[in-house]
Amino acid sequence: MFEERRLHPIALIKEIITNVRRNIVPIVVGLFSVFRAINSNGYLPNWAVYLIIVIVILLVLTPAVLKYITYKYTLEDQGIRIKYGLIFRKNTYIPYERIQTVQKKQWFFFIPFNVCQILIETAGGNGKAEADLVAVPVSVVDELKDLRDGKKAAIQEEVKETEELEVEVLETEEAPEKTVMLQTKQLILMAVTSGGVFGTLLIVLAFMQQFREVIPTDWMEAQAEELWKMGIIVLIVLIVLILLVLWGISIVTTLFKYFQFKLMKYPNSLVVEKGLLERNHTTISLARIQGITIIESPLRQMLGLVAVKVITAGNSGDEKQSGDILLLPIMKKELALKTLKEMLPDYLFEIEEMERAPKASLRRFLQIYLIWTVIPAIIASILFFPLGLISIILPILAGIKAIASYRATGIFMDKHTLLVQSRPIFSKLTHIIRKERIQGLSLRQSIWMEKGDSRHLNVWLKSGSTSAEAYVRYLNQDQAISVYNWYSPSKTIN
Image: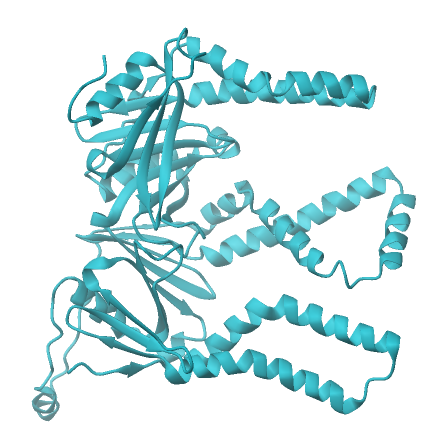
């Protein structure tokens, strides 16, 4: 029979940290509200303060302790079995052939104990890992890999003989076929050119929103009046300083997250390793890759830089998006294409040979973008004159976006690979898809597009527990039909 195993004791510390991180905002808001209400209504005895603190500690510790005590896992011959829970017991069984990706994370305080966290992801994980081994020996990763590859773990019955002969057995790890590492200056460039500052700003605003109801309204109004008295110039300087601080936080966060980034190629998989405080180790099976996405934001496009993601049938714990795993955070476009050809030789990366949309499509792009901005800009200019004239900027920006979208539109295909390029919002996306990985393909044409002989092309891929979509707008009708006939087993469209 297979032996049940328990988590390492340090898993308890990790679970406590996770519970505190998840509940820190409601705990702080709740305590602040309680003490504020009591201070405004009457006296709070010392024993009540201690009681509240004990209750909060129990709420944080109890779930972590119960999960650690009851959590057990078993590596069986055909799959992994996990069970935990005291009142509501959960029993999970995952066959090895259903595993899409395996992530290994190692916090800095895990290293002295030679343990790591393992996230096991399947296609039906609903955006999260199906199994989470919080703290297990690092050797479990290799054992799990061998079982996935169909190798049964041999029972070492000759250990005693080996000890008697005092023969030292050295285990040699499989060396990667190719390794790509990002230098610190590349990570800094990535952080500087990313939009992480806006994400940080949203987090700060969301955090402040939690305290909005408990902060006195009079105090907030008084502070707003003081800021307004400082003048427009001072306010602008203050806003710029805040953005610079948030930008700095974003840069530091990026450096910590992608510290010593490595991409390694093995015969049947790709391995991504990164992180300073938390060392993240993700294994991507080549057979599970559904497609590749090359991302070029406007600023990085001007600098000749790209980022590369792979779309898998598993769920990514990396970018919080089901099925998306960042393969190359940043790299020169020419070098990135060369690296991808070496890492994924079954794919075609002839982006320069893509067939562009005809010039007639530019008129379609301009019409669709301008019609939604010109009319509102005219109305705003009339109703709010003269400040409303600022809205004239909207049609100008829409026209620039239309031209950029038109120039980014293109397709290319050979016998087994389809390349689809577009600019949905700001970034230019190039999707590289194997024919056998396409889940569905459709063409759409409105009554207004018939005169221009243009069609929309949509391609669907399996991505995590949902689907990913690659699309191109206002392709020439012949271009769109050629792609449809390339994919369709029976060519029925004329």
